[in-house]
Image 1 (cartoon, rainbow, N blue to C red):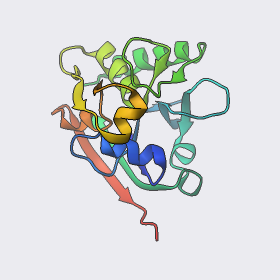
Image 2 (image 1 turned 90 degrees about the vertical axis):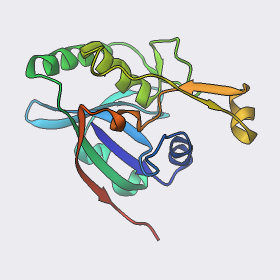
Image 3 (image 1 turned 60 degrees about the horizontal axis):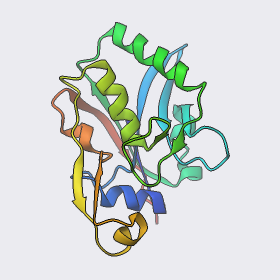
Image 4 (image 1 turned 180 degrees about the vertical axis):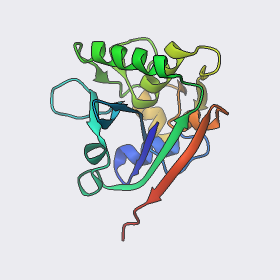
Length: 178
């Protein structure tokens, strides 16, 4: 799994809704495919195309373009080689449909997703026992209550996967901004 943190509006929003990790604001699934490391992720790309993408490391961690100040890699130890092939096959199917970034964080539409919901669904598809992540519920106040037009939000935090014993942090980097 690949994490990154940004100093953008989206980054601050994600960090406000994490459980413990105050640095990560976006997550995707990192796989080695066709002699390259690719990160499959859903993000609000704002270009009219599907918001589900695969990006190489340079694209995903485009430090200047994305205003990235943090990067982190986790390994999912319970995934086997044949399960990686299942993930890749499923991701290639997703390339043929239009996925839109879900700004409302609703959990009822497979074609409207946000990054951690996408990762949760992919991991759950592989192993619904060891990689089953429960939603987090948070009371909303102030601007968040106004934006979402409701009193509480049920969602998958970006950092929810880090709490699972089947995930191990491999490396992290910080890119301070002044």
